[in-house]
Amino acid sequence: MTLAAPAPQPLHDADGAALLVLTPLMQRYLEHCRVEKRLAERTTTLYALDLQKLQQFMQAAGVDELQVGNAHLRRFVAQMHSGGRSGRGIALILSGWRGYYAWLGREGRVASNPAQDLRAPKSPKPLPKALDVDDAMRLANYHAAVSGGSDGSNPASQARAHWLDARDAAMVELLYGCGLRVAELTGLDVSPSAQARGWIDLAGAQAHVLGKGSKRRSVPVGAQAARALAHWLAVRQRLLASGVQKPTQTGAALFVGINGTRLTTQSIWQRLKSRSLQAGLNAPVHPHMLRHSFASHLLQSSGDLRAVQELLGHANISTTQVYTRLDFQHLAKAYDAAHPRAHLPAANPPAAKKFSA
Image 1 (cartoon, rainbow, N blue to C red):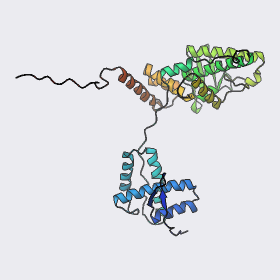
Image 2 (image 1 turned 60 degrees about the horizontal axis):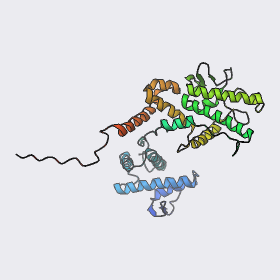
Image 3 (image 1 turned 90 degrees about the vertical axis):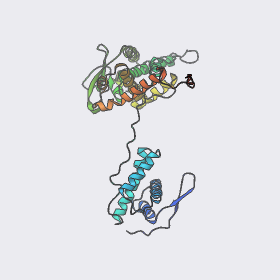
Image 4 (image 1 turned 45 degrees about the horizontal axis):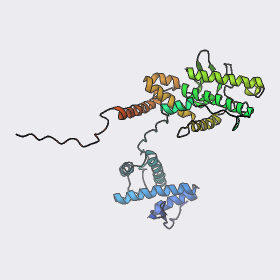
């Protein structure tokens, strides 16, 4: 189907200012996207903005769209990168250009796609978000005030608040003290069985978990985590004995909710978010942030990357190496704060003394 070139329509930027009018071929391509490909209006608008950038570069370089080659586009990419545009942003623009030149090729207007083998600069991988040691300890040491109301006179509410605090404290200790993934935490049972995805061995001070790729691993349980777990298990057992929760409801799950069923990952996210804010942290904490904190703090103290890899259950050590960047950040901050040569002198240096001949 051959489309007639529509009348060129001006684009507008976010402030409503008119931009350059696209070329007739660009207008035809956008019409093709709207009519034949039936793309969403938002997608077509983004493609139009990509073509707007291409047209600006073409005018500055003095080339026609049918004369643009790979070298031109490389120069355009370099200009965008030096101007501060992210690698991801450039990749999206290149995708729009690639689609446009692929269409021009099908229309017989260009012999090859100049954007076909062009890739955007790699964006630096964001560092995992980890708590500093003080915030991690504040969260781990936090215990909610347990009362049944303003005068603590409601025993049922008091008991509920007590077991919630005991359970949540044990979860925080396992996430931060053992570096477990939230899915590994929800899969824990009280004792081993043929159906168990994971379980706690308090006597041996170990957590046995089923990680990614159905790979099992064992991690040590520290003294603080063991104490929190022992307390939670005692509270959990009292719930069963009192009949508040039925054994058939609770089953083998280590961490259960109000209704006696195994906690979900979403529930743990919500409980941890609430608990971290109650503990006075500036920002809400999610489970994986505690896993990052476990790895970062352990690496800062030990420097043993292989041990951290084993404890986290990473198949490839390159996955663990990201924490060395966090460790370097920690060292850099310590250097800036403590080393006498880390900062420029506050005052101007003394003037040179004059010596008489």
